[in-house]
Image (cartoon, rainbow, N blue to C red; front, side):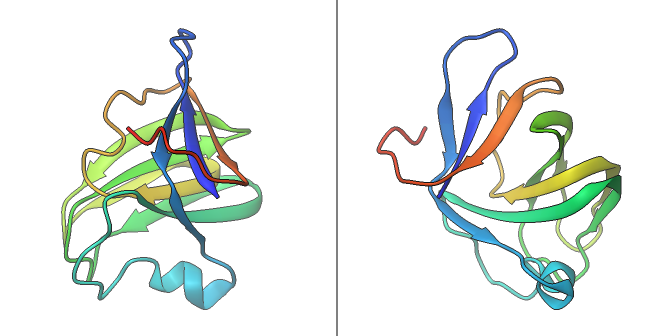
Length: 124
């Protein structure tokens, strides 16, 4: 699985993450990336929801900064870098993706971000 970014301006695509995990179930969604000492460079944790709604992310017990994308219908609604322990973000979404810091550089509201099956060597 990969997380792929397609800018709204149409400047091609790029892989944001090639090591993708989906948080399935209430406990996995609550735990998220809490208590982990580090996050691999090309990693993403994806939170999928059955319908759009207000989705919040808190950084309590998260030890590293995260780039977070809030998506609705595969379109970026908000991009935010959250600080360890004290960061908080909230936006409407049907999918939230957590990435290592700086992984979402260049991603902007209105861009398309999709989770696709398969692997790709063009991470960057």
